[in-house]
Length: 66
Image 1: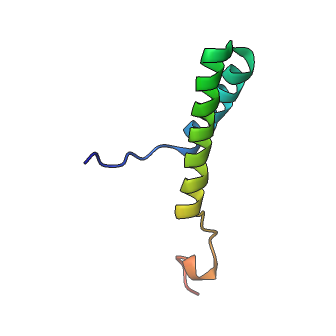
Image 2: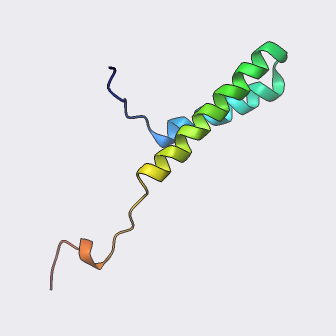
């Protein structure tokens, strides 16, 4: 089995944007592929946020107890 690879969410967002632009501007065979690629990258972003939500620092996260 191939281990999972960590990918930046910013990189995935860029792939979604590029896929969407190519999907709009390209001819049908390439536009279909680019649209599917953008949807796939977008789904990975959503799954990433669902499995690892961003944590906001709270009072318990402070390093300096007073």
